[in-house]
Structures are given as structure tokens and as C-alpha cells.
Image (cartoon, rainbow over all chains, first blue to last red; front, side, top):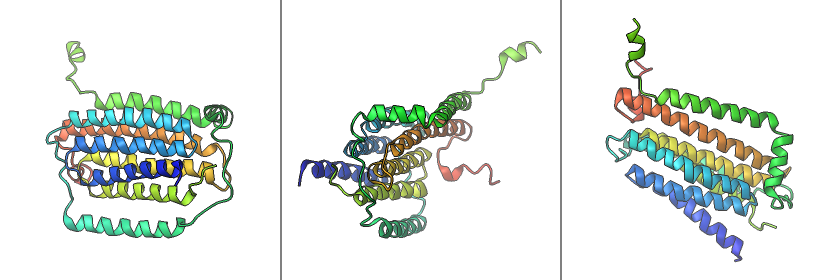
Length: 173
Length: 104
């Protein structure tokens, strides 16, 4: 067992156990804390897949931004911090059966799958390769993502703004 | 190069996807449903990055698409939380089975 296998094993174990704890814990804050570990270990998996820049973005966006945003969401909507667990026994059982069937079908498909040879140059100047690809081949999707982020910024502010009774307008009536 | 086979990464991603889907289908708190959706998107990202290293046509494209998906996921989380806060202000609940305005 070399170091790569060991690192992979540790990261995969943390990721999966974070997910399982997410299903089982009761308090929402604990769930988000556990999910942060899952996101961090997924970043470790990206490093093993020679995608350093994606790993960096994962740490910044997920374990930084999205976790904090979810905590804000909980704090702003808190009426009890216990996540009332299940939707009833029979419905969760039906969901479990369906998901296990899905898992088995996909697992049969991807078991022992291997496609061709692997890329050998992804880890050399990873950021430079991504930058060249984005600004030469994927310029229009990149700009579209920028526009989407702008629209989301404006839309989120407009949605979350409290509707005050409009004093300025009523003053001139 | 990397000695870990492709199928192991795919199985990890499949497990995370199934956990996320279970969370979406069985949790009642809308914040946890949003988080489970994020977990499913992460599983898809693992698949994309693994295929960009091991796939039929390996290259940097998978990583670029993973970046796009991360951006869209952040946008989805922001807009979902904004909708959730607006709903909470009007209905005083975060349970997804009580958000049935369109059903009545």
C-alpha cells in the first residue's frame, strides 16, 4: 500500500462518513459542520486526480462560502434547530428501497469500468491549462456564467429584501 | 501515474450521490434539502474530474466543466436561500411539506 492509496482511503472514508452522519444527526448546525469535512475531503480527492485548481476552488467556495451561507440561512429561519427527522416511516422506507435499487443498477454498470489510457500532463501547469482552455475554447460559457452570477446577486437581494411599507411613495400621494 | 482505477472514484461518487438523494427525499427541513442537493452536485463533480483524467478522451475539459458546475451550484445555493428566507418571512415555516401554496 503506497501513499496514494492511503491518502485516497482516508479521504474517501471521511467523505462517506460525513455523508452518513448527515443523514443521522439531528441538529442542523452539526449537519453543516460535518458536511464541511466532506467537502474538504472531496478537495483532497481532486488533488489525487491531479486537479489542483479545482481543489483550491472547492476549499474556497464550498467549505468557505456555501457553508457560511447555509449557517446564515439557518440563523435567519430558526424556529427550532432540531431537524424534524423523517417524513414518516413508510415514505423513508420507499425512498430507501428506490435508492438502493438505483445504486445497484449503476454499480453493475460502473464496476470494473476502465476507459483507455489516462492523461499524463494534467498536473503540469494545471492553472495555466485551465486558463488557456477557458479563454480560448470556453469564452462564451464563461461569460454566461458571469452574467448568471450577476443575475443571481441582484435576484437574491431582491428576494430577501424585506418589503417595507413604502413611506416615500405614500408621502407624495 | 495515478494507480487508483477509475471505477473506485465512480463508486465513491455514486455513494455520495445516493446519500444526497436520500437526504433530498426524506428530510423536511428545507436547508438540509438544499445541502443534500449540494452534495449531489459534488458527486457529479468528482465524476467529471475523474473522467478528465481517466476518460475515453482525457483532457482539461472535464475540469473546466467542473468549475462551471461549482459556479452554478453557488448561484443555486444563494437563490435557494433567498427564496427560503422570503418564504419563512411569509409563512413562518421551513418545512418543505408545508410549503404548499401552489397546491391549494
